[in-house]
Image 1 (cartoon, rainbow, N blue to C red):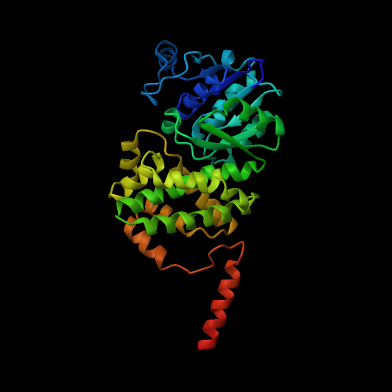
Image 2: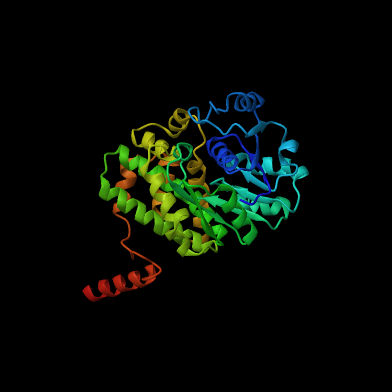
Length: 355
């Protein structure tokens, strides 16, 4: 960072926002964190702990927590928006009264807004009209980040200043920040992988092995990139941290909220029981519904997501869904090398040859 102290505002009092606030403070920034709950804000200021989301994490003592949004935002050069997707638009609109066009706005939320199928950065763009907008996404389980375990993330933006400033503010010896200019691809990777984490949790609860998990993750990556390209993203983005990197950690770790929901479903619990037992937001549940609806409209082939939709919302047993998926169409492996259409055409020729 430069010698001039930068002021950073973090909107949100969850685990990831709290970890990022502390990292920025460790790097010398003046950090203020907005929380809706004044009691939790007082606890952070007094004990330097967030007992609700990261009870064992010692927050940098210089982080100032407040439920006064105006005070937190005024004068901030970088604003990290770490709000769950369901409340994201509401909070951004509330913040609009104190945001200025010189500020850098970065979403850390992995979700999709139902109205208009908008990504969080698109909401930032629509609500503010600002040019300094970015997305932070990658294999970043907040509890491991809080333990200062080595990991990396991606800052994606069309704006070079946004990319450079976030790298400067958050990059440290255990948290590498890589840059991308494919904002939609990075953001879609972060949102879509939550779908397949639920499927991976289900597969684990059903006793399926490592071969199954490997197949699931690989085919999930194919679905993610297929859908994202339809939305205008670059398929190469999914070979990076925000694609395959985030997918691997979310589909492999019991720390993932979406994985835990899927595991509960695989054990036979209802969706309501699974979500209630979690006690936190699992973004993937809503994402399954939104993405499947959009994929149907766009004609995008997403058999795993569609099968998961049937389990979540139509009460199809998880084991039955897995059986049906294995009976589905055998297509190409990497579609950007060999298209599905080419495989279908060859199969038709083979069938005609046998007639």
